[in-house]
Image (cartoon, rainbow, N blue to C red; front, side, top):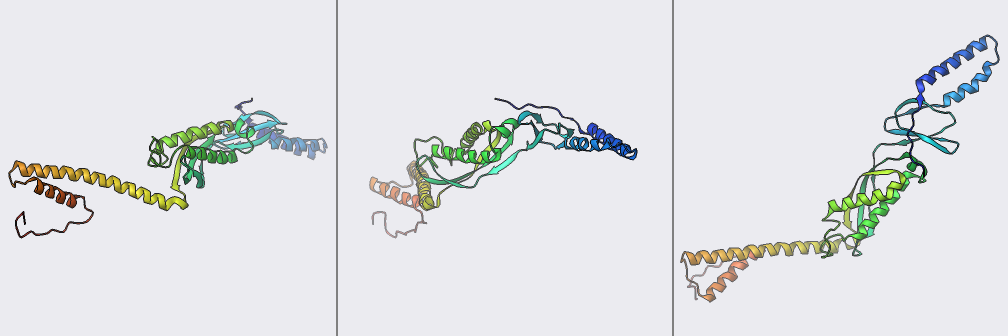
Length: 283
């Protein structure tokens, strides 16, 4: 299999001077009545066809009658064989922002996902001749890579307790995996993946409401757990302080009632309403 071959083209300014000499010579011969000057016209036109300009971060792929001759990557004004077929390819970094697509995650939940891909052409031979249209190839293969990646991981870890990485929580690891997957797919087209990142991730509309309630319930349970842990510590501290300072002597029944009241006050989701006891502790 052929590989990219970098070549140097001849200076365009030198051949521009040659063209001017041909024009001057042709005009002189015509004024002298020499009909041989007419033969210079097709030669001059053919010579002019060989002029080309290569802009910064552009490449010029040269083909002679179906045979790849090389690529010019140096920018400037050049002259090449006028029989060459010249194709210009951009070497600049390009952005691809895919549209959100619906895929199923590892557990079969429908999700909407899209990515941003930063890429550039690294091998002009492969980009020109190994694929039909390298820009379309990038678009299709990026979507295929996203579908494969999304199906390999759950959306969130609470959906799969055995999963160490999920699409939502392990974003950095997922992005690195996405870059590797895309690079493996795009190497054959001579494309270098500079960066690939997920920029949109959500449940599909048909299950978004139910999953939102589930996430809210999970958050509430986690918050309640922290509240209970803190409340138990505060009750234990209060009882220890009361006993250490001999403020009040509580029998087991009153001690249990006090613990119950403190837990209700500390763990309740509403402000407690105080009740003033005008009798004794036992009435």
